[in-house]
Length: 199
Image (tube, rainbow, N blue to C red):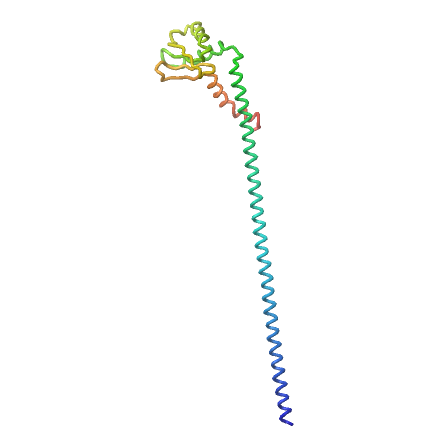
């Protein structure tokens, strides 16, 4: 009987110790599992934030690119519009010169007198539009320039005005309406741009 009681006590003690050890193991396992779950949650949150940050960053970059493209397109349109306006002004000036509704003889006289003295040679050639040959011949006679003018030549490429050159071709001054217009435009273009566009 005493042996049985001792065995029972030993058994109980072993079972109690085993139960306690099992509880410790279970508690440790629970803690480890909880730690793993928490780490997983934190990792998922961090990955979500990273992904979310990536998406937001990409969206911001795309928005900036759209804005830049819109600004460039707007600038391009403004430049094109300005160019069109100035081109129209130039074309209108060319039309006015083409219609020649002004004193052509007076204009040619002024251009010839202005140009002929700038050529450092005894004799010069004068080029004019075919329609202006008679007019320029008349001016040369009136202004006693026959000794300086070797020849008057018709040039259909000259819409109006004159071109004067030395006989050997070393000196040449283009005082045609086209050249004069280009010269005037170069001079007034900055002012014209300021007046039209406030620049």
